[in-house]
Length: 85
Length: 295
Figure 1 (tube, each protein chain N blue to C red):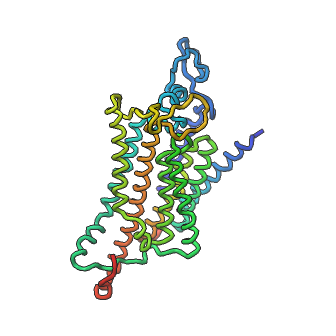
Figure 2: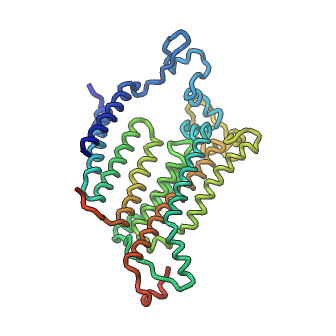
Figure 3: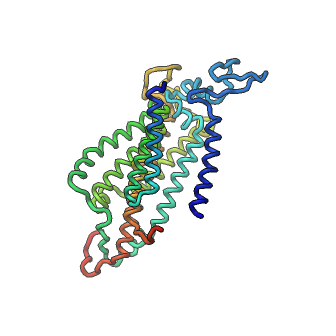
């Protein structure tokens, strides 16, 4: 008999995998950044469930917020130069 | 071929990870040490009564030694303050190199100051819609204050200088993205961020050296249990929170938090400025029409 917290762990880990794969395979780079940001948020949730609130705050602020902003600025500043194979 | 190599490396790394995962202890189980007669000792048994393990020592004595209720912060800023100095220096070095990479733009501006100013390319990150701007204006002070709260209460609640600084910096990122570069550059100044970052690290190292000046060691918590600044004593055990405790830990938290806010400010500012430069190089502005434009 699984407890609800273990079910939550499994669901969150599967969602982390899904969002990470989507970030890799997404065609649009902005969509990939949004997916990576969602993955960071889920990782922060997982850290919180594992009783590491310090790491969770850092992951949520840096991974989901600031990295996404920096990536978006970098994507807007650059141009696509080659077609993917 | 490429896909095959990728798959192979993935399988090898995955096998190693699974091997490690199978040897991990169950979540929440303490470290098992080997006792004198090959007996296995769980950490909570504490057979000899003296503190055999470092983490056990920290859990038992951090309140007495450092006057800090939050053991994680006590470890990060007191027992292992030297490691945190390394972290802060890494951040400082990274931001310095970003500053260096995007420096060309500022040289360009300096050269132009004598010859009349050029209007910079302005449609890099545009101002967003009124709804976004208004809601980010409303959210900005709350996020900023929450970040300061995490920094100030680092010795009582989860969090600390790095975490609170990151939260407060995300508020600055919000304003920069919502209002666009042209307006946001009037709110903040890169030079102020740069000075702030250096001052944060300077205060951090000065506090560490003051430990030597107090007659103890580098990063010695000379303010704890003093009765003056952050000097109230903490009763060991699960006690109520008193913000006036912790000695140098809250001060180090503030220094690091200040440094992190300014560091992320510099990163975002440098990148936005670099975008401006690229835009200008792609379609150079007409010199006749742009005279008298503000910088």
